Amino acid sequence: MIKSVVKMGDVLDALAEARQDVGLSEIAVRSGLQSGQAHKYLASMIEIGIAEQDPRTGKYRLGPAALKVGLSALARQDILSTTQSAVKAFCEDQGLTGHVAVWGPSGPVIVALYRAGSPFVTTLGLGVVAPLTTSATGLIFLAFSSPSLVKSVLEGESGDAPTATEAMEGRIAEIRETRSAFVSGTMIPGLCARSAPILNLQNEVACSVTLVSSSETVLTRDSEATNALHDLCRTLSSRFGATI
Image (cartoon, rainbow, N blue to C red; front, side):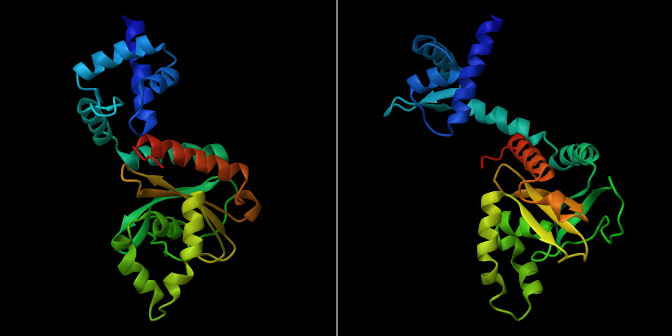
């Protein structure tokens, strides 16, 4: 009985990871089962609504019951508190100062700050609003938020300069591709920052995680701390339903 449940779970994983309708043979390969075995489990899953089969193509996808379970699990996820706990442990492990920010009425606002490693003087603190175009945190929100959300704040920062947003397009495209933003000295002189997004079910930024250091070497594109930051944020984003 237990083995059957595990094997059905393998089939369910195969459907979830496919991200699109998938044929029986591919499901069998992904789940490590023979086609006949996979078909048997799929038949049971269709019966209870966890899977469904397209009558035209014969391919399979997750069913309404799977969607209901998934949405129920996501509804119980507290993104902010889960992220804060993970980032606190992460900063202690890395020996670096970091913070978590969420979108507020005036832009990204720091809601959690963890100091570790070598101390340095900074104006960073809880409640500080990060500028969109000159902070790593702000650039993450600029890159991964809907344009309508950031429009008024961005216009306020740009003032009367009509080309301000156009000049950012190349940089924003790179940030979206690498899922990482870096600044040095543009928000606080003498400090650099590397930020990455925590994405939600809609693949939009729910919050950002930013590391701060007085040494650029610590936060280079391929540094140990940067890679660890990316791993953390991708893991949390996947947990919260992001698909990119």
